[in-house]
Image (tube, rainbow, N blue to C red; front, side):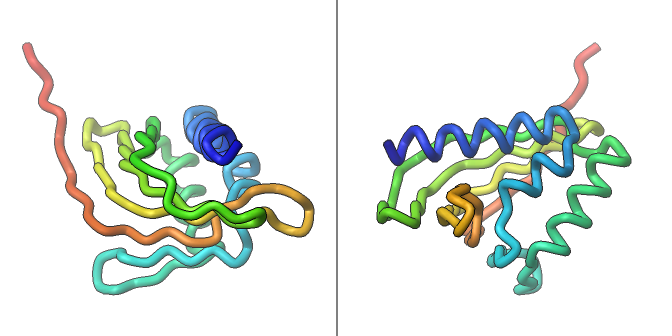
Length: 131
């Protein structure tokens, strides 16, 4: 069951990026979300996440996002924590590979949403075009 919940959440997030559907995307994010481990020790919340995605979607900067589930760390009736490798593919050929933990929480409306992300490591890569 936890694997199914996590898989469905990751699939919905991936689909929202592919469709550039900001409303569907933000429906998967808690108003209380906190993202740790960004450059300069910055922590972002819901509004910053929404602004960032709005820019990426409206300016066609983010092409796709995909995940590889590495392991499930915590399972409770209301919380799931897991470790993933996330790859963000930009329209300019750049990709960002992120090693992070994600915490989902079942909120009062019975929907699973991300409440916390902890980024451990990231690297960027430019895909070269071959002629």
